[in-house]
Every structure is written in C-alpha cells, then in structure tokens.
Amino acid sequence: MSARLAAIAESATLAVDAKAKALQAKGEHVIGFGAGEPDFPTPEHIVEAAVKAARDPKAHRYTPAAGLPALRDAIAAKTKRDSGFECAPSQVLVTVGGKYAVFVAFAALCDPGDEVICPAPYWTTYPEAIALAGGVPKVVDTTEETEFKVTIEQLERAKTPRTKVLLFVSPDNPSGAVYSREETIAIGKWAAQNDIWVVTDEIYEHLTYGGHQFHSMPTLVPEIADRCVIVNGVAKTYAMTGWRVGWMIGPADVMKAAINFQSHTTSNVSNVAQYAALAALTGGLDDVARMRTAFERRGNLMHDMLTQIPGVTCMKPQGAFYCFPNFGGLLHRSIGGVTADNTMQLADLVLDQAKVAFVPGEAFGAPRYARFSFALGDDDLREGISRLANLVAR
Image (cartoon, rainbow, N blue to C red):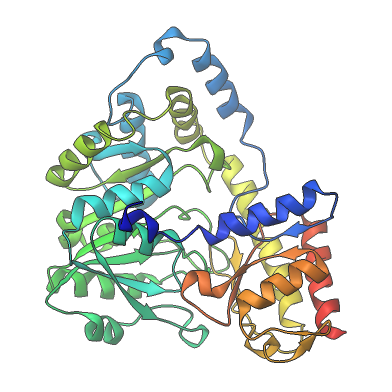
C-alpha cells in the first residue's frame, strides 16, 4: 500500500455513526449525536425533480465534467443572491459532494511543502485533504474563551515563508462559531496583505442563530477574490447529504485546472442528483427557513441540558447544528465505575454504558471537547442528553 494512503485516518464522524448503527442493528436503542446531517427528508419538489430526471434519457448519458450548464448558472445566481458574491458560471465546478470540493480546492492550490493555516477545532477531513494534496496543515488552536475563533495575532505567529493558504470556515463545524462582519473583514485583509490564498467553506451559510449572521469573505474583501476559493453544497441547507452535490468557485485559471482534474477522476456528478440540486437552488428558501427554526430550538435545548451537567461547560451554538461542550471536568474521575483519561475513552464509555454516541474532540484537534449534533428529533435529543447526565451523576 502506498504510504500516502496508508497515512489517512478514518473519518471519525462516520466511524462513530457506523458503530452506533451496528449496535442499533443488534437491537440496542442507541441515540447518535455523531453524524452531521439533517434528520428532515429532502423537500418534495426536489425529489420530484429527480424522479423526472431519472425518466429522461438525456440524464442517462455523460454530461460536461464541470456540471450541467443550467446548474452552474443556478449556482452563480444563488451565490450572488445569498452572499452577494458575483461570479461567472464558468468559474463554477460541480463536485461529488462538498467534501470532494474541499479536496479539489487543495489539490488545485498546494504544491508539496506548501503550508495551510488550519484553525482548530477543524472538520476531520480538512487536514487529510491538505496532506493528500501535498500540503502541510499548520494547526492553530482556539478555545471556548475566544469563541473558537482565530485571531490576527495567531495568524501572524503561524505565518511562515511557506504559507500558501488560509482555511476559513464560518459557520464552523464542529464548534458552531460564526465570525462577525468585522472579524471576517480583518482576516480577509490580513490574507490580502500577505498574498495568502483563502479557501472558505460556506456550506452552513443558512444556519445561523440569534444575532449571528453569515458573511462571505470575498464579498466583504473584494481584493481577495482573485486569491479565494469558495466551497459549498446542497447537503446541509436542503437536507440532501445523500445526494452528493457540492461545488467549488474560484478564479478562472484555478478553475480550469480543477475542471481538468475532475475530468480524469470522477467525470460528471450523477445527472439525477444535479437536476435535484437545480430544483433546490431555484425553488426558494421556505423549507430552509423551517429547518433553521427547528435547529435553533434544538440547539438551545441541547445547550441548556449540557450546561446543567456538573463539570461541563459549553458555548451556545451560533451556527451550523453542533454543540461543542468542554468535557474536561468529566475526565480522570469514575463514571459508571470506569475512568476516562481523554474524550476518546469517554466516548467509548458513554456508548457502552448509556448507548449514546458522540464524536470525541481529538478527531477535531481539540482534546477535552466533544461534538454533539442537534440535527435529530427533540425526543431523542432529550433522551440522549438525559442518559448522559444520569450516567455522570451515578
């Protein structure tokens, strides 16, 4: 086996979800807070568009590697509508999910040894995608005291002559943090002044809560537009995780290389899924608003329940659909007769004794923390956190 692939770590979020489902298959009532996917069905008009496409012989053939022209047009229009960033359809590449857009972005930008500043906590895939592209993740730690946001001072300390890219994610997975307008501008200007590329992941753009708002960096800082790649997709916004449609937007030369790369790897995305995505992007945001309202209610409920557990602190989620509690106060003590020295051990303990699954913070470069998705029904949410609280209290 090649050393490059042998070095890839298993996706912790998918591993936790698989372990929970394996126990469920044995008849255990496991409540899983692991996978980051909405529990809502895909809106009906999107499903109907896919059914219609499946019956159309045009969708049975190869289509352009960059994506259906109508979908690329719709992505460009949607990007201007939702974030104010204007791009040509030719700057859009439709990918097999947002995860592949992340991989292609780093493949297009990184030469061997190029450093990518990667604030932690980070989504588990980012460091792997950077490393597979030949880049070197330069991790910058953040904590709940700074609302899991990186500062200009930290970026300045992390910068070296090898720094090529800054990864910027807001709303953030796993922390739920959302950068303010002022913070986004400051970081964008810092990147521009230092001739550093920005890869900005905007997949949770529609999921912000309270007074927090999403801001697209290349819109607020136009001078970075020629050194910025946007990745996004329909998965989180439209409850379409299984449809596998994402996209990448960037400068013309980068996109030409990215499209060439995709033409030799995945060819085109499933046409049925592309027509479904087209219906999603052109069908309005009413369903999105309803889901967002439910997520906000659930996030507030989960936050309240977690912070009532002795030894647990947690920032109130600002966006996405995750709580990211600090479980440091639960370590090195007996819980159900067993002691956990880190959150990986704690996750196994809780799954074994309470049949509750969550993702340990080590997977996100944040030991002592844990990620809990609140994209599940209210009853399961209450039951799951109650089980955790009862186990800790024993």
